[in-house]
Length: 342
Image (cartoon, rainbow, N blue to C red):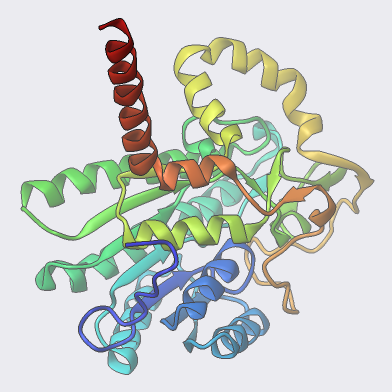
C-alpha cells in the first residue's frame, strides 16, 4: 500500500476505527490528527477534559469522526468500558494505539514509592490494560493491530528517568511475550512497537521534576508529526518493530555493543542534556496524578530546535524498495562489467 493511499475505509465499506490512548496532547494528539486526515473514526482516551475537547475538534475538522472518552488508563475497568463504548458507537476496533504516559525527572534516591507506582501504573500497566482490551475483541475476529508507542529508552536507559525507563523496558518484555503467544495460536492479530527518539511534546512542561532547571528532550529533537506519520504507516504495514530517527538507532545499537561506555558517558552528559538553562520552581504543577487545566496541543516549547522530517524513518518505510533497487543496480553493474570483459 503506497504512503499516499487512504485506507480510511477498511475494505469493507466502513471507516477504520482507531483507539488512541494519551490522545489529548503530544504524540497521541498528533497521531489522532494523522488518522483523522485519512478519514478514520478516532476514539480519544485521556484524562484531560480540555485536551480531549480540543483533540475531538481537531479530528472533526480534519475529516474524521471523534469519540472523546475521559479515561485514566491506570484503571483497567475504565479502559474496558471505553473499549465497549467505542465498539457500540463506531463498530469493531481495527487499530489500538497505546501511548499514554507520565514521568518523573529525578535521581532514583529522591524518588518515592508513590512516584514509581504511579509511573508504572500509567506508563506500563496502561499499555497492558489497553492491549488486553483490544485483543479480547480482535482475537475472536482474527484481525486487527495493536501499536505500542515505545522508546529507544526501552533498550538504553538514561539517568534521572528510572521509573519511565523501567516502564518502557517492561512494555518491551510484555509485548514480546504476548507476540509469541499469538504466533502459537496462529492468530492474524498483529503487535508492533514503534521506538521513538526525543520528541517535542508538552510533557516537558508538566512532568514532575526534582531538578533545578526546565526539563527538555535529549537532542536531536523531532516534531510529533514525524512520529504520527510513521505510526500511521506501521498500522497499515505491520512490522515487528519500527525505529524512528538515527539517534534512536544509535542508542539501541550502542547499548548492544558498548553498554559500559554508555553508562559512563550518560553519567557525565545525561543530567545536563535533559535540562535547559531555564530554572523552574521546585514545586511547579505537574500531571502525575491529575491533568493540568488547558489544551496543550501536540507540540511543546522546542519548535526552534526540532526537525519535522526523518530521513531514517523514510528509508525504514521504503527499505524493501531500496534493497530491490540496490540489488538491481548491482546486477546491472556486474552485467555491464562482464560485457566489457568479453
